[in-house]
Amino acid sequence: MPAPLDDLDRALLVRLGDDARTPVSALASALHVARGTVQARLSRLVETGVIRRFTLDLDPEVDEQAVRANTLVQVSGATARTVAKAVHAIPEVRALHSTNGKWDMVAELHCGSLAELDRALATLRGIPGVTNTETSILLARL
Image 1: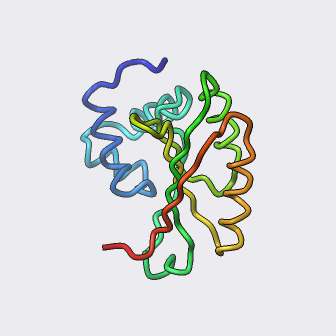
Image 2: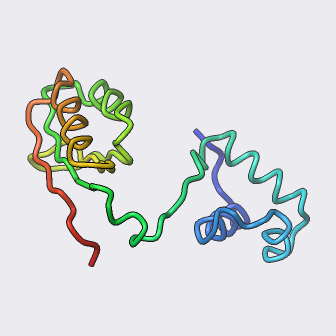
């Protein structure tokens, strides 16, 4: 479990959330600390898993040809951890969330085509322990 975050860690994460490409020197200047302090904090946050990955946020107009969907997943018994591990292994799954109610998980899928979505859903539905799914294709960002 990572060490608790202090105010500097939180401030650094907020700045990175706005733009993860902000240079370390600019972060240091904005946070009024030394460049080495920011670099050490970043290294620690990555090493401890607080920062799990750096990604990109595409302009919706550039990404409009992508097929995005949310899939509700129901699992049997105590198989949730095993199912979650298998779902995470599907490359098209961008995020996986536990939930309450009838459905146990919500998977966010991002695919290049309907055919790719169909293959990803077939893979997901074939995971042992998955008993039911319901998928909604996201049509337009509002």
